Length: 111
Image (cartoon, rainbow, N blue to C red; front, side, top):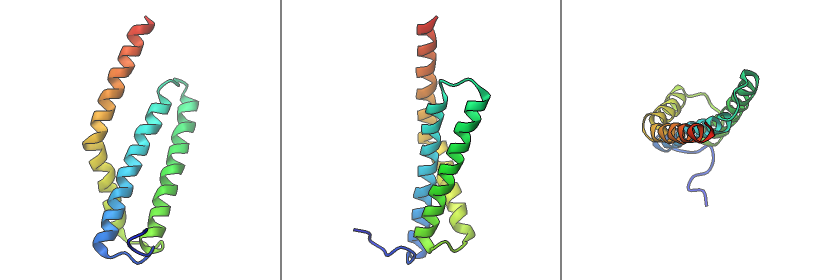
């Protein structure tokens, strides 16, 4: 059950939903970074990055449609950016450190 009807969220609920969307976009970046690890070809990396940008844009657009029917509100985008920053600052660092440790272990195993 949705606690609010789409497009009719209050200001605080809109900010919270945008923050959550930003955190999801940050997590999506880590997922795509894991997918990108085995590829060392710049073309493949570029294609994977484009797929990430498209997925993040779709997620942001869907969130904006849900939050306020697509009406442009600068603070929503700023809060979404803050969500990405918070994810990258705290849980994103742990994921990056774990990924780096795993990668180093795999490289040692191949040698």
